[in-house]
Structures are given as C-alpha cells and as structure tokens.
Image (cartoon, rainbow, N blue to C red):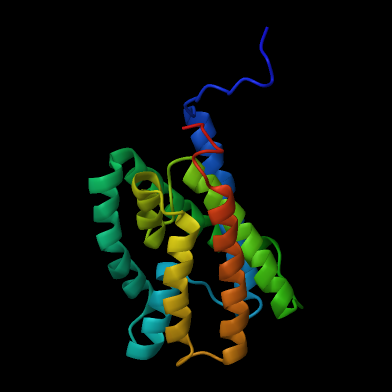
Length: 206
C-alpha cells in the first residue's frame, strides 16, 4: 500500500509532457506580450535590453535581439547540453508563432496600465515556470538563470530580476517614466513568481 506521506520518486518527463509544456508555456508568455503591447508597456530580459539599445543606437530591434542572444545559446550548448538548447530554440519559435497569431483572434481596446502589468507578470511568470520545468527557456538571461540555479543554487527569479533592474534603469533615458514604472511592476511579479515557485526541492520531475 502506498502512503501519502512517502516522498514521490522522481519521474522523467515523456516527449508528450515536454511538448505540452512548451506549447502551454509559450502561449502564456505570448499572452503576456499581448497585454504589454496593448498598454504601451515593455518587458525586461534580453528583449528589453535590445529594445532600449534600439532606441539609443537606431539599430533595428530584431538584429540586436539576435546578436544579443548568440552568446547565451553558446552557453546553453556548453553548459546545459544539446537537448536543452534545442528545446530553447523550439520555445523561441513557438513564442514567435503565438505572438503573430494571437492579434488575429482578439484585441484589447481598453486596459488599465496597472492591470496590464499584473496580468502580464502573472502570465509570463506561469509560462516561464512551465518552460523551466520542461528543460527550456526563451533564450538570453533565462539560460544563465537556470544554469546558476541548477549548479550554484542561486534562484533563477532573482538572477532575472537583477538583470531587469539594470535594463529598466537604462530605459529611463528613452521611455516615459510611467511606462517604465508599470513595466517594472510586471517584471517584478514575473521574477518573484519564478523565485518562489521554480524550486528543485519542491518540484522533482525531470
């Protein structure tokens, strides 16, 4: 007889588990992007840094985002392995697909900035936790954050939040103060969710 007091044995994710995790995780993050775009807010991480640099340098966002991510993919391959890197590439592709498709199905005509920041933070946090638990990220700082948590015990959420503070500080020179403040609220919610929920001592499946 199995006792509910016994510690469960770690169970490896199946291919279907990983597939649905990547699908749901990227869809939630894409929904977060929709909330941000419809309220004039923005995000942190490498995407936020590329956006700020694009404003400052006049270089297209897409080009900077690609260039800024390259070193992190090298780190992903060297430190986390081929499987993790391929899952991350897949997650980035799915996010691009969802972000392209969602505006065709619904629009948001009126959204309070604070509500948008909260909803964006929650959906992004939930989506990223799903991706992390299935061995993937959306590139950039998320790769380093997961690696540091798995190897050094430094919580992924705190690593990402620290990077976001730098990005938002730089953004003050190029964006409206209100947009920066509300965007930072959304980023803080996302990273606090990750820091408090993505823990190896609580979630044991692989």
